[in-house]
Length: 342
Ligand SMILES: Cc1cc2nc3c(=O)[nH]c(=O)nc-3n(C[C@H](O)[C@H](O)[C@H](O)COP(=O)(O)OP(=O)(O)OC[C@H]3O[C@@H](n4cnc5c(N)ncnc54)[C@H](O)[C@@H]3O)c2cc1C
Image (cartoon, rainbow, N blue to C red; front, top):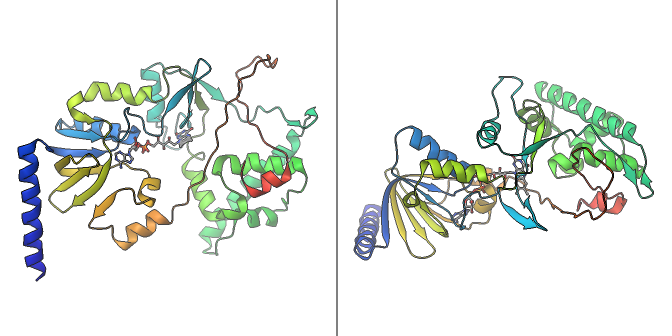
């Protein structure tokens, strides 16, 4: 019975493909790349370096870049998504951050962010409580060490906040709460109470622990995604990219993959490489046939994502600060800090 079903299914696919070919609604390619963000374009670059030119990038938007996206504010290009080149060199391996390599290749304008160079304020104006900020960071580092030891000893995980309390860091004053936010929430986009102590330490080790040197804040007026578009220009022609093309269904087997777009176009490929964000997968925006196995679904749905609000301010008055500045606005209203909607 099952094999009869399979034969009918195969017959239907062949029929659809035949009709598609006759009507020009079907494209064949060797490798289909799903999504034209940084990952998708890097896949295309890698294929191209390996001598494979029969690939097709399918992108829902009218431009490449994905979550590297800019807009114009006043007369300036500002980044809506990624803004930093996160560390320029791996301190453990000496390897250069490939994004930094690319940034140098295209003379991307950026400025180093020195997060230790802080000016602190409260509601009355500038007020120095850097010592409180230093304390918050010192405790943060202690909890990371404790987490590593905890994991090595096979002890049960705790929340990061519990780890902080065990180290005596119990923020109470608005200054301590702001310092706590700056030391933790700013980077992890969540409260320490909602974050795993052991996973935070692992995350920190894999990111800032290795990629330490200056984070570079991209201010290039061509936009951060200029890197993606320039790389694409060098390896792909218009024949290799489908813009404004939303994928609705991905039907895959061990030997081929059929992609259906919202506009009815069908793409038939030997291989597909999917670069959609976990958010896209969590929303079930794309129908996968067969559905992902349970272990993969568990992994997708157990990823927790946070919302970060980027706010842009146009300073009409010269602030008097002459060095390159990155402003972080932290609201000292405790209620706002505690409910996590910064
Ligand atoms: C607000 C914000 C700030 C960030 N800040 C930084 C930072 O400072 N530094 C840093 O390194 N990283 C930062 N990131 C993360 C960084 O932007 C991403 O990790 C990176 O851009 C992901 O690239 P990607 O190619 O993997 O995915 P994406 O850029 O998401 O590319 C996937 C592509 O798939 C397309 N797509 C999705 N669904 C479909 C569909 N159904 N059909 C067709 N196409 C589809 C999308 O349009 C998109 O172009 C930030 C992200 C955000 C959102």
